[in-house]
Length: 97
Image (cartoon, rainbow, N blue to C red; front, side):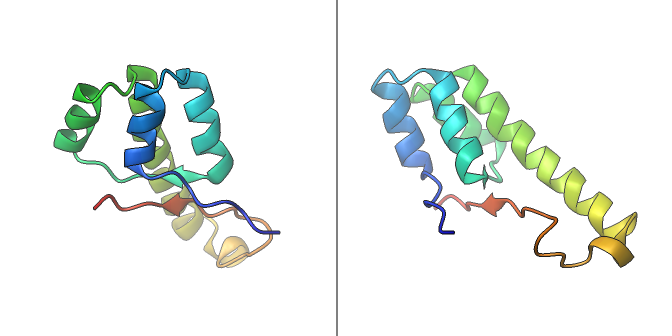
């Protein structure tokens, strides 16, 4: 089964500026399992470009959760979960340009 690619940050800004509700933007990010490792200045820039606070909070929380999950998977249960293709849905980390 093929997934669609996650939206770029530029597309997130475009959706926000076009008036798309924050809940729909977040749902699209969740559907694609997109995770963005953003710096504070990148978050501030996205805020200045009109991305809603709830979307920014989701972006930051999704990245933090991916770090927590990866740490748990590696250190607490590495024997059972290591590279388990069927039981672990890896996030798609999108590095901004």
